[in-house]
Image (cartoon, rainbow, N blue to C red):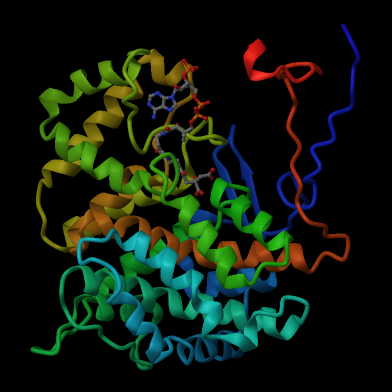
Length: 393
Ligand code: SDX
């Protein structure tokens, strides 16, 4: 047995912590934000209302919504000097690389919302992050395709403004398609928060040291980028395109099952959900709706996705291991149909998850017992030994 020692994780204030924001039941496939089921929020609410709910804990009254939307809308522009940052990147930079850099530097521009000991500065930083992330993401997109930046407009709703900043060009008038705007808003809502996922843990841990909110969000963006996390939406669509036709699905399923092959089905499986990810169900319905409304009949990628899901869920390898489609499995199909390149999929995830990161960061800093996170390791290395001079080694 040896010495049984108590293993103090040392990070109760940040990693395994209490929260009132999001509840997940992985076995039952349940996701609640402040008690409200994600499918009801996705169908009945809209993203800025969900942001208010995550930040303040209750569904807002009509006047609260109006006030919140006014505050967010008036913070959508970025400091003009920030636009100079983009020109330092190569045009082929991944938009996530640009977002990590630009967001990480925001404390150099917004000094009046970096003192985390001041609740008012924490509030201003929260509004600024939610408001400016669409602008920053759209500017990263425009920069990588060589088009001029498009300024936000105060007369557009949050999702429409993002589409306008991404797809309008000075040379012609651009009318936001309400179908796309509704689909965009729903995608934002489905990605808003997800309890203690890897990137939220990163933001909480960074925030626990007292780092400024912009640096914490930049850390979250960096973590989300990984293909095992938010980067899966880009990797999933690229996988579906590589499969190409339904007759090639068995080959990829065999590869995913092969222990010696590192390939995994992107968009499948989850650290917590051992049942259907409720967001994937809504996303699948939305993919059908959006493609139908856009008149995109028989999208081959959607057909491959549905057949891949069907075959995988009939295969004991996946069902025994409780591997189901997750939020990333269908989202890329919708985003591509909306006109986004795959490189913009994870920036859109980061844009939407900003409210979750900020809400969790605020909740942690609002806890008077909060301490710096300091996870411990279970040491399994060499026991004590003396140094040996090089001539005696
Ligand atoms: C997100 O945490 C969150 O909440 C994240 C997120 C959020 O909103 O923040 O929900 C967003 O990150 C969703 C996940 C996106 N990632 C992907 O879709 C990438 C593909 N999926 C995986 O790589 C994987 O499923 C993970 C990373 C999501 C989970 O990996 P784990 O923890 O290794 O999964 P597991 O422990 O449940 O795996 C059990 C078994 C293992 O095999 P054995 O060692 O038991 O033989 O299933 C295998 C895994 O190898 N497995 C897969 C698989 N996922 C797990 N085999 C094939 N294809 C897959 N996708």
